[in-house]
Length: 465
Image (tube, rainbow, N blue to C red; front, side, top):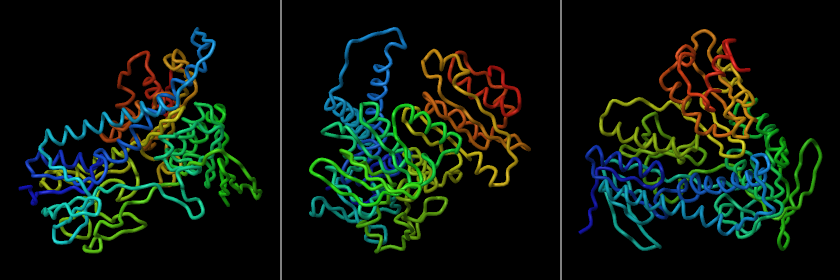
């Protein structure tokens, strides 16, 4: 007879849910995960991982387009879109099987179906409209994630107007493409399709792209994207959308002028909304705001014994934030000595070409928070490894509190900065000052040397520029 009573049940098997379940099992709890679609969630199956596989193909295309820079020549080259997409799906599939194996190894029960809270520590699970069973636990963690947000009049039909899910498995390579929204998701898709030959236009309602990033980094990135052929329109609104047999005409309003743009396809990247519907919240005291579940610093909802983690609780909508919350939530339940999560220490990454990465406060936000700041910068053109790689365009920027030397924020744009940012994230988590960073020995020749030089520059001591 199948088990129906657990110490903890996690609803959702994404990067928050499955990590919480494994940590619970490590701490001796009887744990279960309810997942209605794919273990690994959107991130592993339709987000973080497969998009990075696509972007790797885009990087290869970029190198092929610049073979002469490296002393090579080829008369012609081509790509097979179906094989590019197939590789991406195989990468996701491999990792999905890996999560399944990890849960089995840790003796976590996996329940296939859709869960609804019944109240008082109970939930019902159904699959394809048929009941699977009723289950109980002292602790229930909601990790139901989020989905793409749509705007009135701009609903996706997945044929001409795509969300991220369809954009990952295109059946044709559009000759022209409009991306609505310039956050990480929009910019990554714009970068991928442009690298493979699409004429890409990006429209952003705010006055700059990548609005979550430092303004200087955002402006630098925009110039690089435009050099690579992207057209970027900021301070713009998308009006009416008219669909043809195999194209879309969109009205773009910017600077008091309206322009009709006809493209083969449109990608909507205007944010996400939490999956709070049809999970039985009405049977509990769980509260929501703007389609996200309200929690306290320990991820507790208004219903005793019910918690929520990951995208369903709101920004930042990042897989690593969800995983951290999953561990934090479980360890608090277990009575371990834990600390609340500090969102200022959560790094953000955009895997476009060039890449963008950051942690902590931007220069503007640091000043607005009342800090007297010291700012350091170091350009990629001053770094030997960057030049050797053929990637001399980029910038590393650091922001310090002028009085205490506390590292307030770090911001990067350029090759491989998504791998570099963790150095500053560790420094922030350990409450490092400029002194420790200055006395740290960075290996040569590496891109990481720019991190050191940026710190030195904030204090008038930079060496190589």
